[in-house]
Length: 102
Image (tube, rainbow, N blue to C red; front, side, top):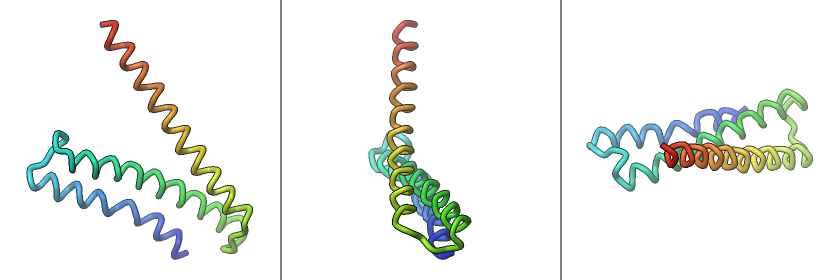
């Protein structure tokens, strides 16, 4: 239960930092804002994957985590990571092509 709660609550910290940076007058043009925003997106993706995996493991085994489930979680994370990158690259390429032809 503690791991599931930790995965759920872990993505809140960068949001608070972005709020503080915005209140200090920083925006999307400042490097620190961009770095923290990128880290926030990565952190949210990891938190979602970890939460989903922990809930699935908890539902299947009642809380006991086995080695094959850990490998499944790692595989799920890798698939989500590379799948998201592939979708981002594809959409970016389509946007470049679209705006290049206009």
